Length: 294
Image 1: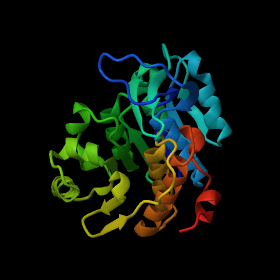
Image 2 (image 1 turned 90 degrees about the vertical axis):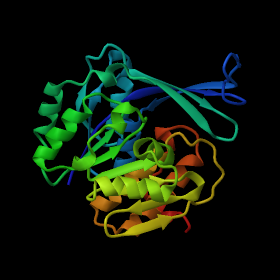
Image 3 (image 1 turned 60 degrees about the horizontal axis):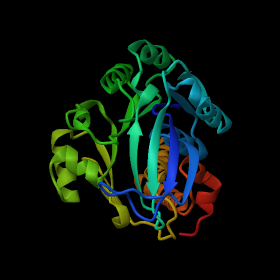
């Protein structure tokens, strides 16, 4: 079983500030650091570190070659990444002393995906494989339709939320992994139970993983529901927490773990990630996760 992550590749520019910048305010940053990033890149690294066979497809500019090199070093196949984008996507990230972050993105080459690239990449995948998607690239409808025709298992993380996500046909999605804010935007509901009820009432075959911050995570499909509490750690940076959780959860599922075990291991991995600074660099290895005390 292979994972194809057709996803974003960003340069993360991280500024440490006393608090998030307010309207009309100018702040001096305490520090500046630059990392490989993008939800796609982070999720591919999480998948790889959890033991999955990962192929990453996407687009960068010449300024982003180090992102491709980073993935290759992590054991990820990068043949699906093309380098003819105008400028690599990037993110401006504000991080507070308590580890909270806010992010704005410029899509750049992530928004230059073509149908020709999609068709070429998907030639090497079949019904035994997973396709992982986020909302940081263009062409999601084309990707979903093409992957569905080939019978791939499709996992979608609808982040960052947008009108495109609100109107997306979820009938071809197998796993929907989202946070409470994204769930509210898509469903129009406010409570976790009503979010899940709404999503499943319209798409009964969905397998939904709804993360709830400090309240943990809940999984629901048409026959079962499971909840998982968080592991309390000292938070340094939450940037890659959700991506780490997603990668580990899907990897465990692909290895035939039951839902409760997959949620538990993914939560452990995310707790280790938030206890470290950085995005992709904070993602733990499987041995670290399995060695973490329950």
